[in-house]
Length: 221
Image (tube, rainbow, N blue to C red):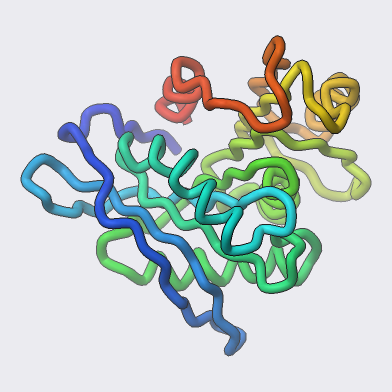
């Protein structure tokens, strides 16, 4: 599947807010939402990006990531949803993975959000959540932005089937993740990912996004 948001009218970020969204299993998630607008102030149907925060994925961290990373996506034509983890695990594991799937289904019922494949992204623990979710059924996703993430490929029975993954890890990562870059890349390649991966020289665990590389990667999905 291919599409580009680069030819849309110049965009700005709409009002930022938190919503409570009902899921198919009867539970609900609190989600920070950001919508793109064109110069006329109109919200047009846009592709969906689900971004997951690092650490426990709580409200404070999710809000910070919405404004720091999410604004870069909305300015490029994406609707961004940053779910708040209900169990402080940033949607890791089968239960958390399933809730993100239900969130996507609920959001794509909205007329201003495009149906079809969705972009997943995450920072740190959220990046690993995004990889877990995508690996369950890669046919549902445009790609994964993991900035940063590690990947062990412990389940050999599933693969990414050529899914595009954008991976960045800071060269001065305080958690030592740069030392695990090579094995993470090897595991992702073994699992069948189409990988764009780099170590960012001198960068810490949390770093400013390089939109000079991420922007073209998004357009090439």
